[in-house]
Length: 543
Ligand code: VG1
Ligand code: CO
Image (tube, rainbow, N blue to C red; front, side, top):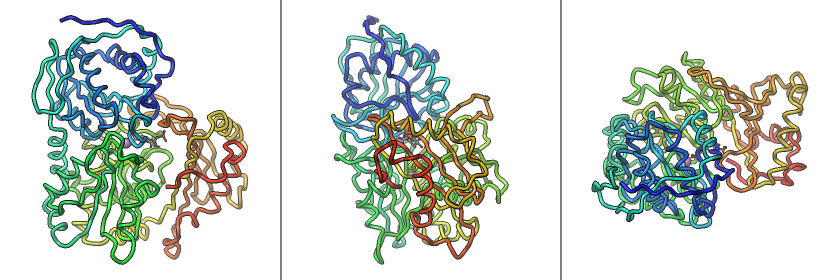
């Protein structure tokens, strides 16, 4: 084998964030940028030598070029075989599924998830370990350390391979198999849920839509929802993955999936609608005239776990990321389940899932999942809701209202201040951090602070510690405000403010969310001096 060793210079900005390394496309197109990061993966993940690697992405601009680069480098670095999604396509949860099913040594996912794509958009790369999950912090730190000194990379001088036919190739000594990106994942979904019951529901006049947002879930949703479950053709909207996601933000929320939301409104609104993001790991759940917050969705699915064939005997426990509302905590308490609060990012659920301590977990950022894979899974959540609706034969609104009546309601909203100046955002967080010690016992806007801290987490399985994961201010009445800076953006800084109020009174379960949270929103703005440090009077996006 003729391996080329190409000299390069290390970059100082290749630290993975909440979910992999994300940069504007132009940065990744820069000479040796992608190569240095990939070489750092091979240099630190020794089991890949002689092992099998899964490679795929969300189909965004630069996906195909990056895959060719990675395949050549994999061969030159002694990887024995690669499984590659046809057309370079593999959703994030499908990658996790393929790694686990074929027991590979890991996978590389090319995606910047919900960030816009296209030549002027973002690109990203992420390494998943043999359990199918995002690399834990000790792995991403080792990769980052290596990027600081890597000064050459190994590759081959070979032609591009054809990514579009289901065939096997060899790249020098490495075996490459182009696989159907959908088949293994669709089979896994059929094992998890009662497809017969869902088929019956869909055949009985139930009206739904799924918006793939021109991103990766189109082929998955068409195969599962239309072909296997029999929904009418056209149920899947925007179902062809495009390199620029049709110019939109492939982010399923009330701000970016307006067309879909409109279909659920009014007397003739659809019974059910859902959407997923760029790489297929997020989900948004809507019913007729109702939006189910991701935090509520997690709580409702956890409370109904035995409705799903894969969990008919119940679940051991649940977990949520710290800023996610405490709705699921109430379910865990009533049902006697273990409940964990982890830092933001799916990588923190991996150990708990592997150890069998939890089966369901979720994040407020439209992420929900279970132990069937080690990533959050958009279509899994959509199918879980369909399964639940098929079993209960009640509307989405009825299920949500009944849930609140039983467990109380956690009103919840996230306010994002996107693209603010980094220095101002850092000062805001530092000032706030500095004021925490004095807050407990104090009155803020008529509410008494019960605790104020900068969240830190010790993994209960391997003892690893993660500090500075976001500022929490909790009040005696159960309300909570959380502040943190995004770790996925590529321009400036994004301040996220998470606001939550608990309401047990059955007479107050139907308020409008922003109204129910109005007092807390003012407290949050004042205590953090948001206008002073960001120059903004209003958030960019409210979800
Ligand atoms: C955001 C979300 C976080 C999620 C992460 C990756 O991170 O808040 O909950 O795990 O995106 O999701 P941040 O650091 O920007 O708040 V995805 O679908 O972009 O892979
Ligand atoms: Co995503």
